[in-house]
Every structure is written in C-alpha cells, then in structure tokens.
Image 1 (cartoon, rainbow, N blue to C red):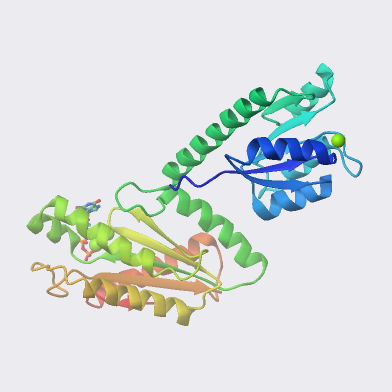
Image 2: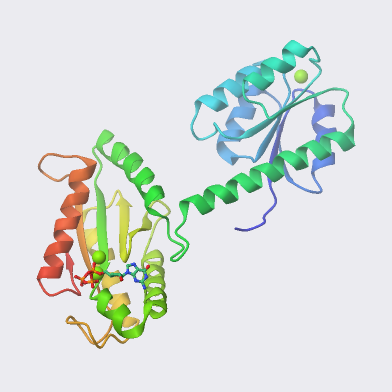
Length: 299
Ligand code: GH3
Ligand code: MG
Ligand code: MG
Ligand code: MG
C-alpha cells in the first residue's frame, strides 16, 4: 500500500486555534479546515480524513453532536476523532471518550504533546488499514478473497434489488487445471493462476466492478449496474485474453493453450430472486460451458 500523506481535518470555530493547529500539522499531513459543525460533517463525508481534530464548543452544533452524526453514517463511522477543547472537566472528557473519540486534549495545549498524540493515532490508523487490506486479500492472486467478496456481494445485492437495478455475476474456472498441475507442476500452476487473475483484474472497467478468488482455481466477477450484454462482453474479453496469454497446456482437452470457462447470470432473473439464486444461475451457466466443451462463455 502506498505511503501517501495522511489527511487531518481540523474543526474549530476559532480562527486562531485552526491556524495554530494547522501550522503544527502541515509539514507532515494534508490539512483540511472546517469552521462549523456542519462544515466538519460535510468535509468529513467528502474527504474521508484519517483523523478529525474536533473542537467541542461551536455555535451551530457542538463537537459531541458532530461525532454522533459521523458515527451514525457508515461512510464516516470509523474516522478517528481527537477532541481538542477548552472543556476540561473530567465529565466532559468522559463523555467524549464514551462517544468513541480516540483521545481528548484540553486547551491550552502543548504543541509537542499534541504532535506526539496525533502521530500515535495516525500510526494506529495506518496499521489498521494495512491489516484490513490484508484480511480482504487473497495472498496468491492478490485479488479480493472470498470473505471480502461475500460482504460486497451481499451489499450490492441489497442495493440492486432495492433500486430494481440490473447486476451481473460471472464465475470463471480454469479448464483442465488438475492436468496442468500434474503435468507442469504446482508452482507453474500457481503462476498460471496468477496470470489469469491479472487478466480478470485488468478487465474490470469501473471501481465498483470486482474480481475475487472464490476458491481454488475459481474466480468470481461482480459487475453492478451491468446488463447481460455488457457482462457477456466483459466475460468474453477475459476468456479471449487468457487464451492470448498462450500458456502451453498439452494435456487440455479444450485447447493447446491454457483456457478458462465462464458462466454468468444477470438480474432480474425472471424467477424467484435471491442472492443465492443469482449465484447458482451463474454456476449452472458455468457447468453448461464446461459440458459444451470448455474455453467458452455461457450466460
Ligand atoms: P475442469 O476443466 O472441469 O474445471 O477441470 P479441472 O481439472 O480444472 O477441475 P477440478 O476442479 O477437478 O480441479 C481443479 C484443480 O485446481 C485441482 C487443484 O489441484 C487445482 N488448484 C486449485 N487451487 C490451486 C492453487 O492455488 N494452485 C494450483 N497450482 N492449483 C490449484
Ligand atoms: Mg470553539
Ligand atoms: Mg474448479
Ligand atoms: Mg477447473
């Protein structure tokens, strides 16, 4: 993962406070500013900062309320928050921490201490992101793993059915891969699987399209807002690109080079609809592609 500069949003109604904090943080972080509670929420939603330095007393909305609202929105719920405030009573601090703030700093503050605390919290944020990334990724193919796919599939399914939108899912399975391993060896099989995964990843056209390793040598491709014709087009381009890798496969019944079969299905199904039914429809389409001779797409 890239080590790009982390973003800190400073929300304080006092211009001097904003300036002092900003000048402390600017050398090390991308600094964003908000003058009101409303602005803090709007900027947090728009920029998704890694950390929010939040004043408590602001005329339009106090910092506690800002934090409550950020926590209530899944998009901003996990932004790290440090209160930085003149409200120094222990009950104020306890309230802020109970709402989920990572830290509570009272004014007047010591610049060195603030910098140290900010650095510590941002380090934790960085490590958490890295762990999340690793937990979602398949180590061999560097595609999303099954767990990640299941999460995304569920939420995209909900979204598609709520808005009556179309959505396509495709299952890809390498042809005669057992023979490939037997003949060329498991390390060569791993390399081939990685090459096929790269092709699938490169075929994703939009940020919401996702290719994941479903298991073994099976990949799954989820394409929200994609009808059958478009899905078929993507699947066909993947099938073609894999064949064009020209990875020799002497033992394949389908072709002299390594190939894949792909089965797809699209919402609406026109029958009983469920996330499982859509997936099963893609799986049956894959089965038919295999039956029909492999190295083909079936929708
Ligand atoms: P078909 O064309 O019907 O799909 O035949 P197949 O041989 O590909 O199907 P089968 O499901 O019988 O075998 C899948 C093989 O994929 C078995 C297993 O050795 C291999 N495989 C699964 N995961 C990996 C992996 O991570 N690395 C390697 N090298 N091989 C794998
Ligand atoms: Mg204030
Ligand atoms: Mg298989
Ligand atoms: Mg196979």
